[in-house]
Image (tube, rainbow, N blue to C red; front, side):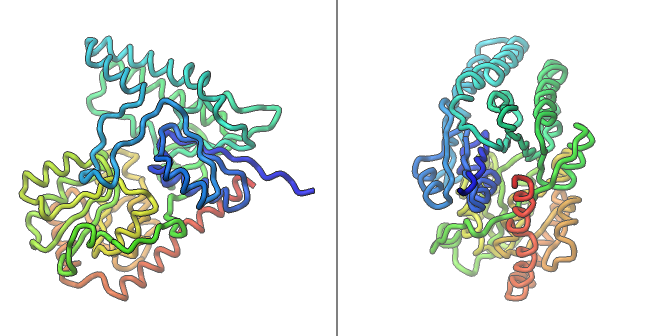
Length: 422
């Protein structure tokens, strides 16, 4: 009689359609014959869920109460309206109606009530039983803890996508946030790490930060791109944006966040040739669009909004150059390996990269890569201008980038994942 395959439940705070790492990992589990389920805290569209289940053999469970991320391919700036899940609505009302100091305390109490009481009571019972829970968000740990059974020897794997103590830092934190809320979040993550049988993270620098801060030994599984999951498209970015081959098209993939050097890019574009165009693939770019308009760049700067993870690389392949535009504003950013980097590599586009420690390590001596300080407008102008003059994207560059892509493929990383769960 054959042995029953292990049941692995992955848990993400996002809609699965917006979480490429969770999707890749869950699909790898299914590919190896495990019963792979994803519990998403916010809903993907029903059509996308049906496609995931039919195409990749995973099951998707959506927890009630969360609202979908509203930005999508039809939102030209990647604009996301204010989060409208029930917790955020309550929080927004509190901040509007109460004095700031009182609202901070109320927010803290409400946060703890939602994550430590309401979710464990109302949502834990909706999560399928499993042999392994693969958790992608420490704030959901109190809910998952209800499912960990010593009798069944249930295993917990915690995947830290960032070094969160640095992510949570803010220059304008209030006294209450600094002394109470942030320490509480850190204690919650510490509890999750202590209970986990294995901690996983995305790169060596982040691993070192987590290891030193929490006294643990994370395993590194880089967030490389899985081209087996890419969709096929007859319409790349040039057709979508109605740009002909004379346009030198530069792409930056990634949601706008602290350290994402939009202002440097726009300032450089003002001084570059008019046939150099810029396209941003990602969300939260409403301010980027406004700044582009102010600088007279509205016809040369384009925004796709948030594309489905499996659509990004097929769309980006028509670009001539890719920027990975990060300035190391925190210790976490200093050590990141952004999704947009791996997706640009998989699209076989020549790269302009910041000198971040882990990026230099993984790229090594690869050719057709330029290194710049993304706080330096003149350096970026020179990197983009010289790439254009050299006709940087050609058959040789594509072959070189193919070699780098093969070295940084998800297939290499998922072998570590298999050893972790088998």
